[in-house]
Image (cartoon, rainbow, N blue to C red; front, side):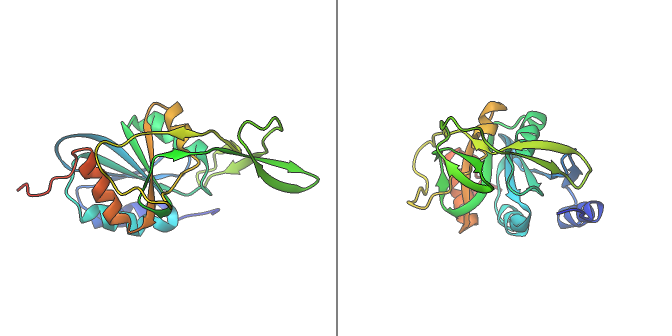
Length: 209
């Protein structure tokens, strides 16, 4: 995505919720800050551009504690912008919206390699070097995305909807490296999974005035 009307989108987000502050980080990620009730913690909800309306709608229907920062990702699912956002925001936990349904807590890892013009995926510990891509963001910043994504694992308190098709975001290791705990959140029935995740961590304000 070469060009986006980012300033116009910020105005739209602030119109959606007058109390919400929106900004653009150096990598073109649109960051929307939503304030919940007292207590809680800072959570980063990382959302692909196409899923942003659904995620904002789901979050807007829930009452939560703490602060949720929605990071609307304009990259093709790269780990580098996410890692930099985590370093900057310093959330305690990160929810990454991706394929599937339910809540994901682990990822096997993989590496992309290229040989004779053909790209393939291999195990993360394969000795072949990973391919590296040069990206340019809508803000003009360039970065290198190394297509090697390490395995990761996190845990959930209590019961939450983990399914056979639970999402496993490849960017999770970059979240761990930056000092937060990653989780996958499937775009199918996103609101229900988000509600269950907030409840599991005591961040849902059901029944409060």
